Amino acid sequence: MAEYTNLKGFDYVGDAGLSEQLKTNLIEFFDWALMEKGNFFSVNIPSSGQYGGARHKLRLVDDPNYNSGQVWESYRGNWVWQSGLAFTNQADVVQKALEDPTYPNRKRLPGVSGVFVGSTFAPTSGVGTYAHHVDYTRGRVIFDSAIATTSTVSADYSFKWINVVSANDSPWFRELQHRSLRRDNSDFDLTGSGDWSQLGQTRVQLPAIAVEVVPRRKMDPYQLGGGQYVATDVLFHIMTEDGHTRDSLVDAITFQKEKSIYMFDVNRMARKNVYPLDYRGTAVSGALRYPDLVAPSADGGYRWDGIQSGKLRFLDTSSQEVSMLNPSLYTGVVRTSMEVILPGI
Image (cartoon, rainbow, N blue to C red; front, side, top):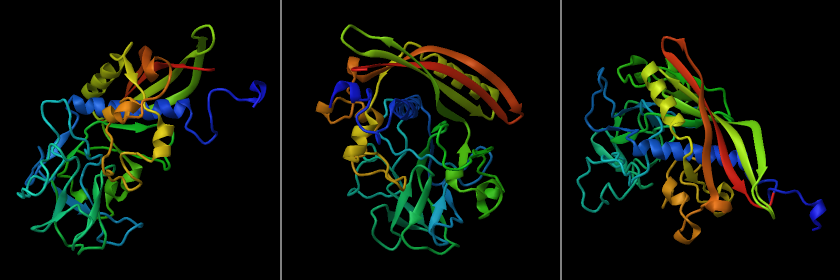
């Protein structure tokens, strides 16, 4: 095709553009990097929180997409499925109560290996009386067939405390959920009551960081013969229930100024169908963690093929707004200019 008829900067109109690549990479980077700093709590059987409440027990969910008795959720979503953290302590991501040498060691197998229905352990194998799958995104277990609504369902799991989400493309209007760490809240045990009447996909549990790519971009020449420095503004919206956590997250993001990270190519992942979680929120076999995704192609990764090995650099970073909207909602905004070097544009 003649050069004068060709659009620059992308190959196919259905591919994720630079904005989508930036947003996805930043969410995955912060999600992983915060876990490396201890961003998780582990729930074991039995358990009791600071304010009481059995945190290991799951509640029945009134989800119109399933039959009553199929869906059971924990008081916190965003369960950990990744293993191999550099943090001193590892997330308890596999059921420890099952003393069976035929099951892999929990440090080598990410994800929840099963749940208890009453005193019966049901492995997450997709077979048996209590066959089920785990929705890590929403922190719930979905049985293939409905079980008795009076059942007691419990599990060992770890959940991520700080939630990193997209601010651009929520399919529904989302509701901030306060006091989600208070398992003693009686509403949790009542199906279809209070905050918990909202389905998991419409709730944002605090603290949270929402990543927004804004339409402000600057481009400068990279070198003779082609290439561009492309700087895109990104807003990090921080929402917490106390000022200390908000200020800590503002610090954590602003401290990344001048930091460089590798990017993975969302489009190559899509073509190879290697998303770590499937449409159900379940970890697929051989799910790739963030370090695996940004590894070079020769090592089985999907590192973005750009100038300087597909690096993304944090440029100017500043705290723009810090406020208390009410006694239980503290907010802050950090603006960062993210720079990549694109060839051929």
